[in-house]
Amino acid sequence: MRRPVLMGTLASALVLAALPLATAPAGAGVTVGDEAALQAAWTDGGVTDITLTADITLTCGGGGAGTRATSESVVLHGAGHTITQTCADAEVLSQTGSGAVVVDDVTITGGAVGIHAEGPVSVSRAVITHLAGSGTAIGIQVDPGALTVTDTVITDVVGQAVAIGVVGWGAVDVTRTRITGVASPGGQAVGLLQNGAAPVSVADSTIADVTSGNAAIGIQATGAEVTLRGTAVTGVHGVTGGLGVLVGVADAIDVTVRDVAGPTAVGLYTLSGLVLWRSTIADVTGDGPLVAGILTYGPGTVVDSTVTRVAGPGIAATAELGVAFSTITATGRAVGAGSVETSDVVDLGGVRILDGAFDPTSQVLADSARVRLFGTVVADPNAGVVNCRGVDTGVVESLGYDRADDTTCGLTGVGDLQQVGFDPQLGALADNGGPTFTLLPSPTSPLVDAIPFAACASGPAAGITTDQRGLPRAAFGGCDVGAVELQPDPPAPEPTFTG
Image (cartoon, rainbow, N blue to C red; front, side, top):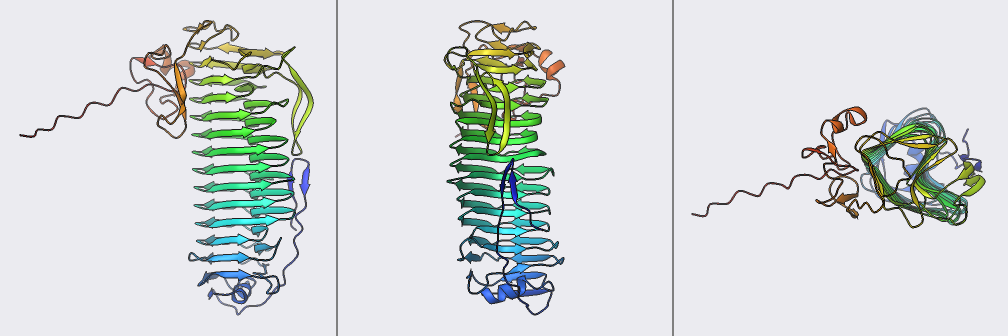
């Protein structure tokens, strides 16, 4: 039985008319070049291998590709051809049986849903584009089977009520894939949605330009553990709010989350736990009750990472959080008298994301939690903002060798420096090498070699041997404070003997 897509309390029933079944001659493998042949092969459980020999146009009167209802697996080789659905609000490839579906080297365009299956699905070297639904539009939907997407582009998915690039209930694995242009003028838009609790893995991929007249979310998996590697989430804009990444647990390395816009806006939001290495969270904007670069409701660590240009706290933690070798700058927001905004509940697309008070007026906010810093620079806040603030029982604690340009972090650890007017001499956010943009300190920066070698290779720093760019730490006699370790200049080339 097909289940509706659920996003928090938002339930969007996906009502899809059943396409008529047809019978094709049984056989292990066939080639098809028109609508009738594709329908006959796709709906025949005896056919397990289908190869396209031409572009195929599906029509309402012709019955489209039909619905495959079998426990037998099928492989569809597109051979570089295109399947075009001309019937509005229809699916292109539909499967209600438990058999696996493998789709390779094909372009799927038109209709409202590109691929909708109940069994396991594997998609590679495909383009799924120009989907439009008067209600819901989805690039790929799999329930309850596992979904694997590799070397694929999913783009221009527009649903008036709901738009989703990829949605699964089983395990989801996305590699070297671009999901872009997911838009819902009147409802909710999500780039990648996990509707169950199965794990999600996204590697070397991009989710971009997710926009909505209501809530927009780049990756949503509130009940799942999500592994992110070498992935960017950018351009997430919602009229009521935007969330770059909203997950249960995040294990993220070499990740960029940028250009997330509210009014409620969070770059990376975890409900149960966070491990973040060598990543950048930047350009999170909004003037609503909740704006933050990183918001954690579970214990975690942040290492070798940059958080900058956020209209709210760069990091807000409600559970134990360790932050090492990171750079937090140009974050926080002044909100006037009292400097505290409150909201009983912030509801974003049916997801309840906040109870009680939230204070946006610091770069690091410890809300009923302890945030421990090591080798981290917290400086140059936005106007009217302090570096650190504790709410209720929250406290910021130094484990040593931190730098700040005011005294609000209470830096009293070994090698700490907190001084009004302290200038870390950081450059602009830019490509300084490595997989993510960084803030490069100048050669004369007081951050350079501020940590003795013995201290930057043991204790809280044990096991951290590279900077955000993946370059060696330490590079000279000691380690640099912050996410970036300056490197020696490359040796001059040997002179060439010209005789």
